[in-house]
Image (cartoon, rainbow, N blue to C red; front, top):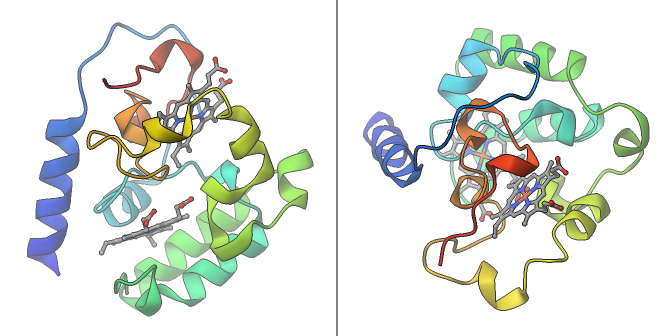
Length: 153
Ligand code: HEC
Ligand code: HEC
C-alpha cells in the first residue's frame, strides 16, 4: 500500500506543471492528514464539492473505494471524517448527493465542464474526469480558479 501510494504521488507530482503566480484569495487550509492520506492517489478533492452525507458514506466504505482499498487507521480516519463533516458543501451544492459519491457526476460539475468536448476527456494526458490536475494546474493545492486551467493537448 505504501509503495503504491508513493508511486501514485510521484506520478501526480510529475504530471502537475508549474504555473504563474496566483492572485486569488486564500482558501480554507487543507487538513494536513487529508492532503497526505486522501491526496496519495489523486488530488485531495476540495471538501466543499460534496455534501456531508456523501463524505460520510465514502469514509464508511474506505476498504471498498472505487475498486481499491483506501483503509486508514481508526484515529486518522476519524480526524479526516470530522474535518470533512465541518468543511462539506453548503448552499445549493449541499442539496445534491451525486451517484457513487462522485464529484464528477454532480449536475454542477457536468454543467461547469460542458465546454470540454467528450473526446478531450479521453486524451491520454487526461484519461478520466476525476483527474482534475490534468487541467487544473494547482488542483493539488486545492485551487480551481479559472486562471489556473490549462487543457493538455
Ligand atoms: C489507494 C489509492 C486511493 C486512496 C488512498 C484514496 N483514493 Fe479516492 N479514489 C481512488 C480511485 C482509484 C478513485 C476512482 C478514480 C476514477 O476512476 O475516476 C477514487 C475516487 C475518489 C472520489 C470520487 C472522484 C470523482 O468525482 O469521480 C472521491 C470523492 C475520493 N476518491 C475521495 C477520497 C478520500 C476522501 C480519500 C481519503 C480518505 C481517498 N479518496 C483516498 C483511489 C484512492
Ligand atoms: C479536461 C480538463 C478538466 C478536468 C479533467 C477537470 N476540469 Fe474543472 N474545469 C475545466 C474547464 C475548462 C472549466 C471551465 C472554466 C470556465 O468556465 O471558465 C472548469 C471549471 C471547474 C470549476 C469552476 C471554476 C470556476 O472558478 O468557475 C471547478 C470548481 C472545477 N472545474 C473543478 C474540477 C474538479 C474538482 C475536477 C476533478 C474532479 C475537475 N474540475 C476536472 C477543465 C477540467
